[in-house]
Length: 88
Image (cartoon, rainbow, N blue to C red):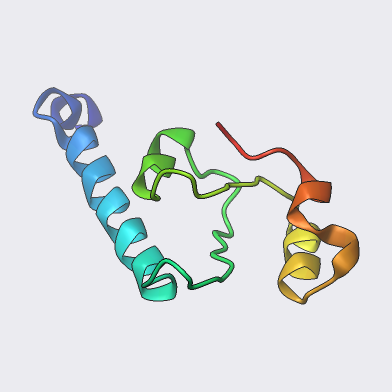
């Protein structure tokens, strides 16, 4: 079934749907240029190919759950620069 779906473009379609939903969710958090916020995806299985859903220049970090919680809670010890380099 999966092979037939891939041949008809199902996987590419699924990716487009996921990208659109991510972009919509992110857009609800960040609406204007001056807006700030933290958008967290709690999935270690988030494929890099879907990160194109976010606007160019948006820094993306892959971190452990405890680091994400500390950052969201406002811990200065876990500033994004101290966590890791953004995913490219």
